[in-house]
Image (cartoon, rainbow, N blue to C red; front, side, top):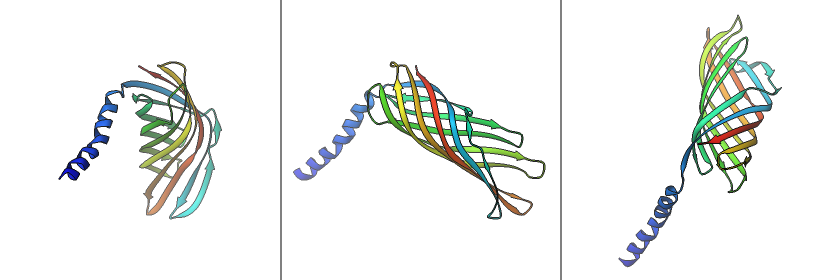
Amino acid sequence: MKKISLIAALSLLPIASFAEETKTLNPRFFVEYGVSLYSNSSTEIKFDGEKAGEADTSEFNGGGTAYIGVDFNGIQLGIAPEYAESDTEELLGLNIRAVVPFMDGNIQPYVSAELGFANMEYNDGGIKFDDTAFAYGIGAGVKYSFNDNMNIKFGLEYHSMNFETDIEGFEYETDMSGFAFISSIGYRF
């Protein structure tokens, strides 16, 4: 019976230590705005599983993305709304984003992950569709904190989303993916 009591007491130690840590998490709201300094991305188009075309959409100084959420002593959980528009397509997305630093201090390496959904309306005069797709992204970089409130980040991120729809009996698929070198500035309240 003593062994069972000892095992039960020892098994509660991680819960007690986690409860102690959660008291010191100190949640704070944050806002962040990031821009793509360079992106190397492509769009692949398929009809009925056969590749029908590919477009290289690599660019310098691409669009920006705003993030808002809660910062728990450096660990950020937030949402990232996204909007892009061109002559043929309109893209609206919403991602949940997590950023986890590796160490404390003014300079912190980090990893990031995003999960979400994107909606694309496409119309090039011949092909027209409206589809919602699962989107995801991963990344890594370095964060530099000027003080307790302001920071900048530089990182490399990979994003992907795949749209599939049926157009007049044909399966149409658009796969958008690529890497981006990003920079962002953030503020914790």
